Length: 392
Image 1 (tube, one colour):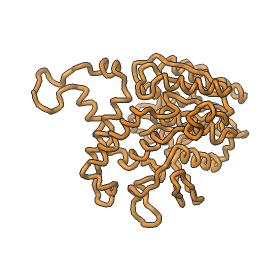
Image 2 (spheres, rainbow, N blue to C red):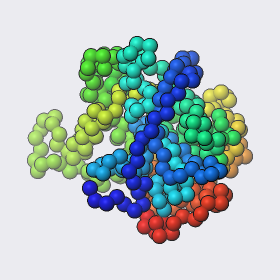
Image 3 (spheres, rainbow, N blue to C red):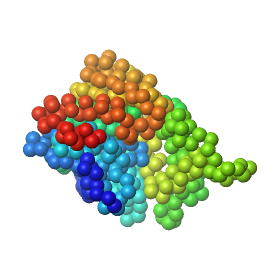
Image 4 (cartoon, rainbow, N blue to C red):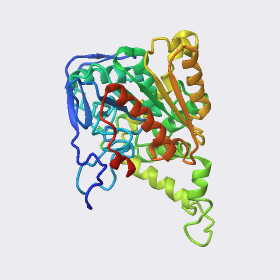
């Protein structure tokens, strides 16, 4: 592998925090013990004031930046924004990124062993919510000696976690960035999630979630779920410019095989996902999305629900994101304004749909970097390395 980029956090090693204190969940059940896998980038300062928490989206995990090995081809999922001189400059900030409870990348979840049975939890793993994730994240922060995050940042489902942080633990979050997210799912989004879940549950190899006991995997169902989901992450423009109606060969075959490039792409994405992600975890994560609605306990009044928040907000949306469109971000912004909160909003012109929050869009980076630079200034941190910043 060539030398790592100068603006990379380099080689990183995941860490595991084990918790013996039982965690009471919103669903009424309790996790007696659990593990959280996480990575950190940068250095925590003596005042422990420069920590930033990164919350991941549906299929995300703890590996947000850098590389796990010299021969790793792709860096972490948000590497475009985390590193020396980047928007989240690891020469100034200490960044924490974890895999949520219920995940399948090391944190305790359905594929982990149930301590009471010695077998995988499978479908018996309790339902987890955004509230539960934030509770466990607070415990991780305490383990790391962090009483207050300089910022909590997340995109998509990660943005929902950021919002929950600001409401449940307002004293522990100094700034919030909610990117390509929504204060609650629309009926259409819940419908997409249900189609994905039914694709998994109807797979003959699903076995009511006990597939691990039978040493099989519901690959077909998970593949279909990912294909449906992936369509919603891309815009029509992005799919059109990338694939159009291009054929894999010069001639039509007049059968049901793969003929169009977009078909090949979706099948490839589905095949890769079906062997790298746990089906029970996918079911849990989509349900957590469905359940999130902080206004539900306030007669649907989002402004009332936002009353506990104390920190400034950055809300970012993308013009072609039809999964969580700008109108939903504006709904959040308007509610924050009605609640008397400090909020900045940017709607970024991008052809990439929902996936734009993962990409290095120049205006997105500029808005995001300005937000982070203001936080650094408030903390009295050194300016970003200008040479590194110009290399962005």
